[in-house]
Amino acid sequence: TRLPESKRDDRPRVVILGTGWASLTFLRKLHTDEFNVTIVSPRNYFLFTPLLVGGTTGTLEVRSIIEPVRKYCQRADANEATFIEAECVSVDPKKKTIKCVDNSAIKGEVSEFELEYDHLIVGVGADNQTFGIPGVRENSCFLKEINDTRVIRDRILDCLETASYPGQPEKEIDRLLNFVVVGGGPSGVEFTAELKDFLHSDLLRTYPLAKRINVTLVEALPHILNVFDKKIVDHVEKRLQETSNFKILTKTAVTNVREKEITVRNDQKVESQIPYGLLVWATGNTPRKITTQIGQSIGTNIQNNRRGLIVDEYFRVVGAEGIWAIGDACIDPQKPLAQTAQVANQQARYLGRLFNHLAEDIYRQKVDDKPEVVPITPQQQQTLVIHPKHAELQQTFDNILKKQPLFKYHHMGTLAYVGDHQAVAEFKGDTSTTTFEGYVTYYLWRSVYFSKLLSLKNRVLVAFDWTKSTIFGRDVSRG
Ligand code: NAD
Image (tube, rainbow, N blue to C red; front, side):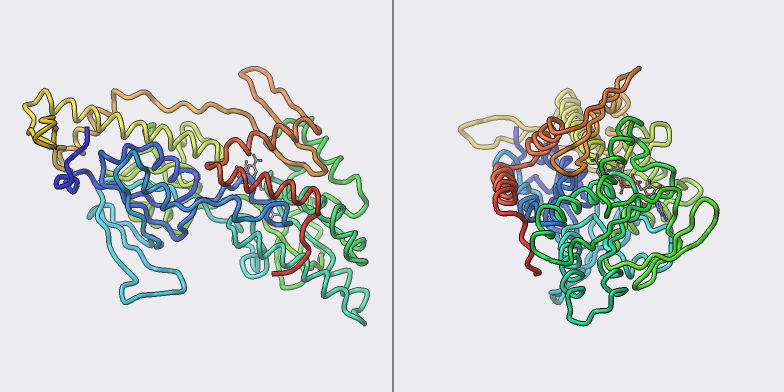
């Protein structure tokens, strides 16, 4: 049953921050009829992050893995949600307001505004972790946003073009063609694998100097892929180092980054310098500024976790009323989970369902409670219940919440591409772990991600890109 148009403003105001896995999944799950929904994010698209590294070498075009968020604001089966492209810079948990600014190139007379919320869903993801190491932000390429892939692709080709200048000194050619990847987690490994494919399938054919490219994966711990089973780690380490120009430097931490070289320190505390042409930084996640600001405005005595906003079992941010956090932005210290798309997706589905149940339960309560009756049309003479006002709803929310089932994460397994049409997969049971490696796993990896793409359009484009790069190779033009 739908609320009449005139009464829609009475719905509780739900403001969603972000357009990534957590926020978009929540929006897709939410019965937007029941709420007055606004989405605020500095980017007006959803990015399918598991396939992002393919964009760094041109295996995929990035436009094939993004989706306009506005499309999901106008679903035929639901009332419209409002999207605003802006960055939320602060939240006032007491006044229940957020402040937003326009951080895009085009600015109008209004480039700042405030919004009130009854429920704020923080699904802003995470930022790149740099551990405060000097020079990282200024000199590295990252692996998080669409533009990162463009920057990396451009830089690989620029290094090769510059190295090919007549009279370029040998030492400078070696520097330009030394590519360093920092962080041996899944992001760093998948990127190194893509780079290996790009080199062997395309660059060696096109650039005479490409055979001088050296790739070093630097990892602070004794092994790469630390969350994976040892069998997988051994397999991937062997695969990545089987060609002479790829090497893994473990037990080595980067401690300083300058424009053309990095300083590394090994476990014996010996420091050395590595010159580079391309530096890709993939050392994990840290909370975004807005996440930290929300935590600070609640109080650092309550919100004191370095990974994100502390939430309870229902994803309510501890210490604030009406703020919820999901995905990489949150942490439940009782049950900490990995910061993956899979986790964000399941949390968002749970929270969406929770909100829908809450709305329904409040609705039913009101029916028992002599509801206000509004006919939709004279023909239908159907009766409707108007939602209670926000404050009352808020209280009812809390009471009903306790009757809801708790979130349970179901780990579906982990997949990673390791290059040369091979992937690894790990499925953890309660007592044992099953691992797979090789070509068949690669097709599993592709099929899983292909099936998870949000739209038919994206599937067609991704299938086309994969076919195109297999038949014609990747494009080596800059720009
Ligand atoms: P990560 O946290 O998984 O790994 C970062 C690595 O960098 C660690 O091994 C760490 O020891 C190393 N490191 C940190 N500082 C360093 C330094 N100064 N010098 C050298 N090494 C250093 O980060 P990630 O790979 O970016 O992944 C982030 C999250 O995304 C994780 O939860 C991961 O599981 C997930 N992810 C999953 C997949 C997949 O499932 N295929 C792919 C990408 C990312």
